[in-house]
Image (cartoon, rainbow, N blue to C red; front, side, top):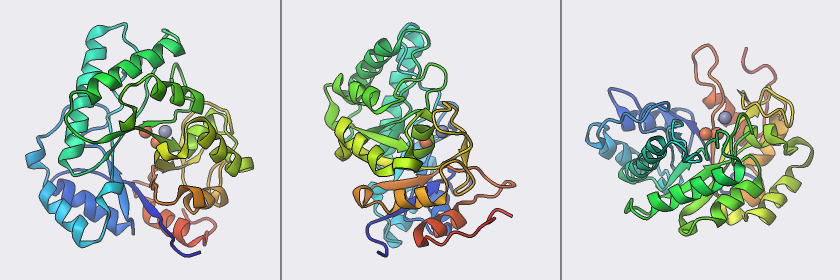
Length: 294
Ligand code: FE
Ligand code: FE
Ligand code: ZN
């Protein structure tokens, strides 16, 4: 079963001097046919104007290299927290940032924006879900794009919401504009939140389909994890070095029910070097090299 319909890539940078052109080149250097990036620093919402980011040059290279632009993924900055409305200034800032990120995503020609559902910070899960759903409807009703938001499954640290499929489903159900909502399944996060991907991958995928529906699955984050199942930790590990292991992650990438969905690695750098070229090659071919990090 050789490459089917697999879109596999990694997180890439967006930095001077080449910006988006550099992002595309970086992705191609790993042997990727998709990628994910932040449109600025992940931890804040300061953003350079799109006109400075060499978007036309990047998109030209995307076309020339045969990458399907609809599989490219943007990740929203993680300072956004729209699951707590007790501080109105922060809540409104989060909504404004979501709107601006949706527009920036469209400006790159991309179609999918991954968003962390956020933390209720003591308001309770149900109130967190309601606050987020309202924020999403507000943002999606005024951004003027057709970009979809992929809500990421979280590991359950602190007061995070979206830590199981039922909570994600409830967020979607509380939104009116649900045709623009989907899900990003992170293998590290769902494992850490308590789903036994290693013991029962097909069962977890079936559960996702029953509760949310696989038609909502827009992105998969392919990460190994440093912690055992249900640890609620969220520490990513290189492919084959964690509790999930190579075989499970290979089966995720090649799973017949997950074909066509962009698969993005967010595994840690090794001595300041990106591991993605090796990880992508192994996940495509199925040939795992023991101690490949050494
Ligand atoms: Fe994320
Ligand atoms: Fe992730
Ligand atoms: Zn994570």
